[in-house]
Image (cartoon, rainbow, N blue to C red; front, side, top):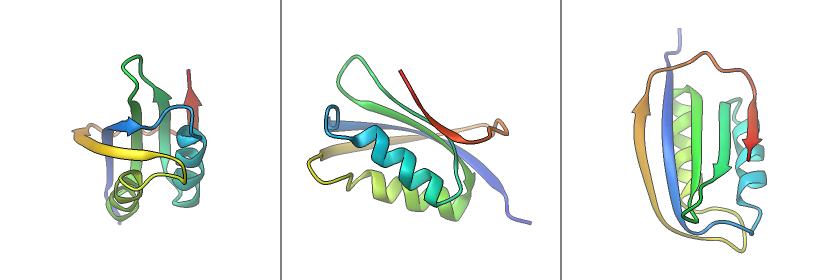
Length: 92
């Protein structure tokens, strides 16, 4: 049985207005992950992601690269308690 983990990542840099949230949702869905992505008022992006450790780790690595047109300066990650979330969405 694969253990489920949840992580919160704050991504800073040029990550708003460049399709970062839509790209993140696609990457998360491609890896079978649950959670959400949203812009924060300070210009960063918050990603909460839940799933297998391997898939969550892979997404976090991808977050540090981002989509074409973005520039990621930093990704701060913290562990969260899994919440049995279903699906992955974009929040406002």
